[in-house]
Image (cartoon, rainbow, N blue to C red; front, top):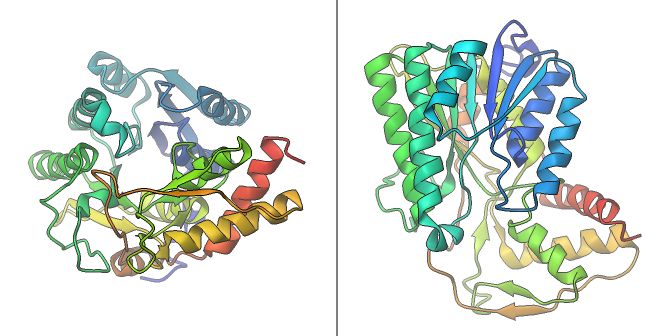
Length: 346
């Protein structure tokens, strides 16, 4: 299938789009793009304080300036609320991005992962069952591949050995979606995101945290024990590429023969963590007009972390003609420029 046929520019403006986690990183940029294309977007978010709520409010305030946007403050784990939302707004396309994120945080606060990622997603599935939708898209994660050594990761790989509770909840989402699709004919697409980054991103992500640490006069912590021969690899994926591919998938649900499918959404170009850090230092240096070198502390790999992520993107390319186009240099420069401006560092 070619680009022209499946271009997101042919997005269906007659549909109603429900985006959960609308004040989150991906939720915000996706909703903004939909609204700019004249679509009606219903957004829900519980505005929790997992990271700085001010950033979530900043994103939300931008969406409220656009026409055809409605916001509900609430949690997808509240079944009565979700049931009422579906009955009132009757969404045609549902994009479930609401979830408790973070691998390390799941070691300290496991309950919130069950509440949001399992119970919350169950409520979304039940709502889609009783209020039929044209397409349900939901966020999975590259973490489902666990410590798989075969690279690049392909959607057909064995993913039954998660090494964090976060990964286990995302694998559970895929199984739940498969079951509901089979039983109730819900067209569903799971999106295995690979390390999404960019301006207005999540402060708990490494690149954002590194910038915060440096400008606070603190060392950054690198969890590879200083072993540069066996450095960590990550498939960093820029936010614009993420939104582009979701826009192409929205109105292209799976067919009746295979009502549930999963795609890797990655850059297909893994970078050494140390290369990523050097590139970030250069980007921040350019943004502030002086050389930036992080002070670095090397520590062992943490429980739940994986040594490498590397997405095969052949399946998504075949489905919607998509290939990521943002280099790590361009993506980090855009983040650095936004970061320096938003923090008023120059």
